[in-house]
Length: 352
Image (tube, rainbow, N blue to C red; front, side, top):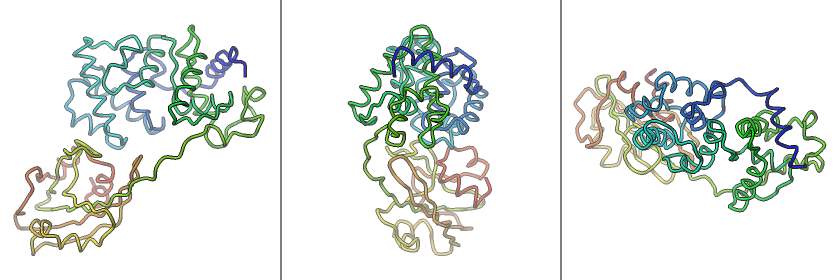
């Protein structure tokens, strides 16, 4: 594929095939930034409602910066990767405090903001401010790998360097915004991971992968280590239509979200064994009614959570409550930011 013709061809394709999305009708860096953060590791169909809710709740970066973190986490609930939500809030505060509420106009300065990496900085700089810097994401890796025949693993330091260099070589100075969005859109809609539309592809005659039937072999990705398995046993203490919950403070998954008293094991055990542990016996007491939930499975990027909820109902006042635990009514719980796993349980058992 001749690099000279790639930008023009893909931009023309984009102009005829792009999806109509709200963040494409603006040069507002706040809205572009917000969309990019939400859509990281999230499909457009899933992320769009969240984007619209955030814009309605926080129409400006100043409004987002002024919001309580718990409120931001609650609005984010369901997207996962809650570090992104916390960094979203930190970044908004930094834009307001360090830049008087205006996003920096250059790639290099954008990188200094919390939660903004190379991809997001390039997206804001090119789309909002027309700086000729390439955006490199999974879609871009796939398109460039197949068309130009690059078999360097995309998740290796060498691969990242090689693809970034090629992407920056291709991006035009005249239309960097349209070009970057075109390559990403082409990968999302046309040059897909499975069943790419090669028969009608504008690059068919020049595509390395098509001519050698290597579409499924490219891009190359190194295998990562196996996912860690964790076994969570939640003690759900119920007293007078209130549930005992705690805010997760430790450096682990779901920081800042609310769940129940947790007993974690390194292998699966019977829930009845959990109830025999001395610390749990003190909390549960002798006169409580106990129900054990079904098995729940929740898959994260590098770990899989297997969980059971042990529901303990008592009319007596609960003793031996841990210091960072509190009782919350069901309406209060509905407003708390919670992991999806906990929300699934609550919806099935308490119809929140």
